[in-house]
Length: 101
Picture 1: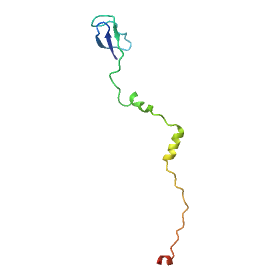
Picture 2: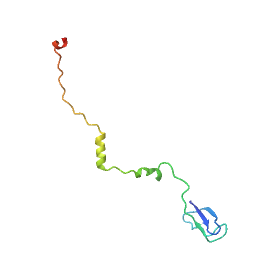
Picture 3: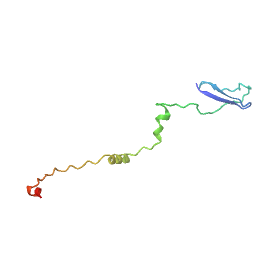
Picture 4: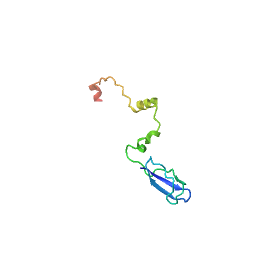
């Protein structure tokens, strides 16, 4: 059940009340009995942490997604180019006359 904050317009009293979502707002100030008791809008006092919550699931949603052309260019640039296969060359044996020099 959520906790709602209320403030009295007459006496300035502020109080938190634990209520169901289906409960009607409290209209009468418990301190002075005035009809000017209003519900305040406030931020939640807790943060959901861990996997599975909005804060962690969509944290990277602000990053722009690369388009397909840029993604294709980055893939070809990242992949090393295949070295052309050269035909094996014949190794010439040194003649005995050259080896003596």
